[in-house]
Amino acid sequence: MELKHIRNFCIIAHIDHGKSTLADRLLEFTHTVSKREMKDQLLDQMDLERERGITIKLQPVRMMYSIPNPLSFILDGQGSKINDKGLLNSEFILNLIDTPGHVDFTYEVSRSLNACEGAILVVDSTQGIEAQTLANVYLALEQNLVLIPVVNKIDLPNSDRKKTAEELKTVFGFTDDEILYASGKTGEGVEKILKAVIERVPPPKGDSIKPFTGLIFDSMYDIHRGVVVFVRAIDGQLAPRQKIFMIGSQTQAESLEVGYFHPKMEKSDGILTGEVGYIVTGLRDVSKARVGDTVTLFDRKLDVKQLPGYKHVKPMVYATIFPVSGDDYPVLRDAMEKLKLSDAALEFEPINIPSIGFGFRTGFLGLLHMDIVQERLTREYNLDLVLTAPSVAYHIVTTNGKDLYVHNPAEFPDPSIIREINEPWMKVEVLTPQEYIGPIMEIANQRRAIPKDIKFIGSSRVDMQFEMPLNNIILDFYDKLKSVSSGYASLNYDFIEERVGDLVKVEILVATEPVPALSAIMHRGVAATDGKKLVEKLKELIPRHQFEVAIQATIGGKVIARETISALRKDVTGYLYGGDVTRKMKLLNKQKKGKKRMKKIGRVDIPQEAFLAVLKK
Ligand code: GDP
Ligand code: MG
Image (cartoon, rainbow, N blue to C red; front, side, top):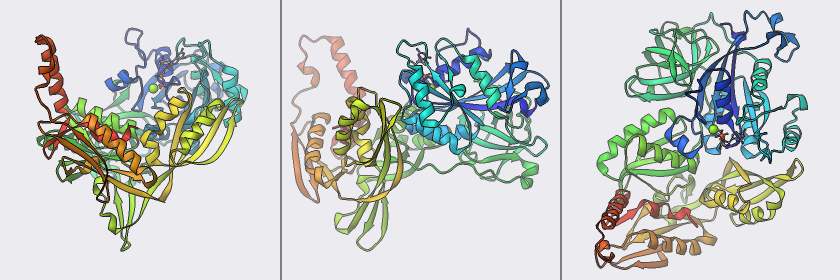
């Protein structure tokens, strides 16, 4: 098949605007998936994605589409009819990539965009443009993609297609005849979308004569077949059983199998120029085939230059992951390395925190990312883990002028050698119906935000811009924003720079022993009140022991708050009347389960929730 018959595109939108559902309809319409196999959000293949109803991973799928009436198609928006373009037949290969919408998974989106020439921009017509709509459009424009705006969910009674189209026109400058209307639910408008993809998205460029050059945009680990890389073929083609070479890692391997996504992997006798497919490499060492590396033919490796790959993504929050049982440390290390293959944004390094033991300091793109990583490690690798509270990265300048980067309050140096503490500041964008401007201003002010700009989007909604310390965003800004706006406001943020902050370390002592993993960095102005709240919360979360447990908060050695957990008198089940055996069992089981996620520090068992207490106000 010639390049002229190939289209690579992805679907981008704010979370829940209907990307995965629209992808279902495209799969159905092109008969890629039979009616019998069809289920809602089919491309959300991970259990976790299906349970939570969100897309976490990019997901490629290859569709064949025979256009019904070739003469009615106009290609490249240049007015030439389809047979003037010398097309041999009416069959097209459409490579679609479904993407996540949440801000924490923007790296998945940007790599998907990089493998495509066009993007379908979906906007929910009951919501309008939201924060990730803007962010994703900017990403797509940076990569010079052709955008096809689609006003979605037009089947809903509260759909306002006119208003949504108006927003698309005023915010992005689309014209009336570019905007399509569809429902991923009913399938209305889907054929027009496919037509627009073929007409407006340019075919991939590439040279099929040149040696195979593929960009690894994703990968996964298969226990039987080793590393499987997902590639966008830039030039040339690749057959099975060829000697391949990863230029970045200087590693040789063999293409044990190649193929396409349907959306399950299906082997083929080659990957063609311009297409998206996979290569089974058999590699066991996961570090040898990294996302962003270039795959070529071993024999032609000197004729091929490494592709630029991807910009490094900077983790935003850090937490330390410990196995509940120290014996699981090697299993955890192996699991993290494998998980990194399918989660290219994950970063980690081994660390030993006195009194807790060995674990990994891990960098995440945000709290949802952290939550998902913990969940995947627990499920996919059957590990019991404890995570410390997430922290931003602090840049400390010491009194003798040294720079220290600290990712965890536990690692803070003695206050006497700190000259200044710098913390990350973010550019924050909130899109909201205008009636919530007041309450949003208020919660932003309470979190050290600096208002920057506010402008109308359409007639009743606004785009508010702030600068805010990342620390205050991760604490509870998102939850508060959702609650003061009845769920209508959406949020996006981006790193600006480090700024000096008036910060102090609040240390927590449990049964007179300092527990570094519970310490927190707080703004001096709120440290006394928030430190007191933290101690009260810990009192609720730490179970009673055979002895009295004192919990204290200190700043620079001075106690600012204290609570006491009284000693346990009897077995918990002793409180139950009548000796109901099943209840007793249940309670014991519950206790056992609870035990699993506790970490013993000194003499005291501290549950997972306690480590995260600092996040909850
Ligand atoms: P994504 O996060 O952008 O992938 O969104 P999903 O495809 O997962 O859809 C989010 C929710 O909107 C789901 O509950 C869908 O059933 C629903 N949905 C998606 N498209 C439509 C549509 O066109 N009409 C209606 N009524 N609901 C839709
Ligand atoms: Mg989705």
